[in-house]
Image 1 (tube, rainbow, N blue to C red):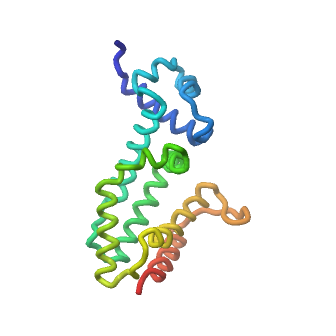
Image 2: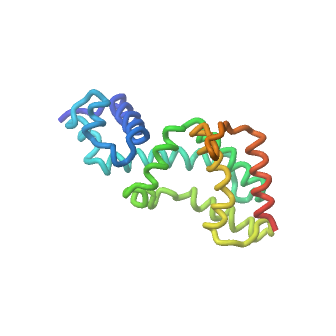
Image 3: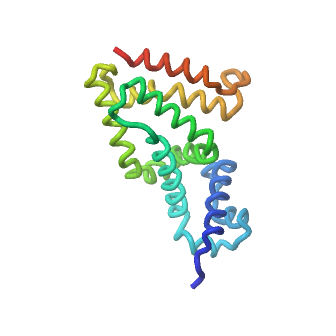
Length: 196
């Protein structure tokens, strides 16, 4: 039986993310991955039992990185403006530090695997975000509303700006590069929209 090589496994994960980002979900295959890594397809099956296992492993790793970074210096007991600001800061930091992983996750979310790999991965992150939302409503700092609508208003502007930044252009192809003043202005307007 062949032994797992940690460096080779890291290479496989890096190349898999690259392939997902460049080829999309439909263009990804274990054969293409093996070729990109300079290894045989059989070698891939030392590390993963199948394509789904590989996707699940990468999604789990990226999800853990995101959830850990999102909760850094965050508490559900923070005031609504302070907590939302911290969430925006953490999410911007993650997007800038791990742009390939963000692109991978976006592709995965809209793939047939999206719901399957996300189920059960939220754990403490979901608990913290739910508690933050409920605390803000109870303290009268947040308008009571459907959690999905809250998410759209609270994070939609941020993710739109990050997507524009990643693409290098905004509406109608105008050049776009995110700046701290843009983030601050959008955050202030978002807090104002959600505050009673």
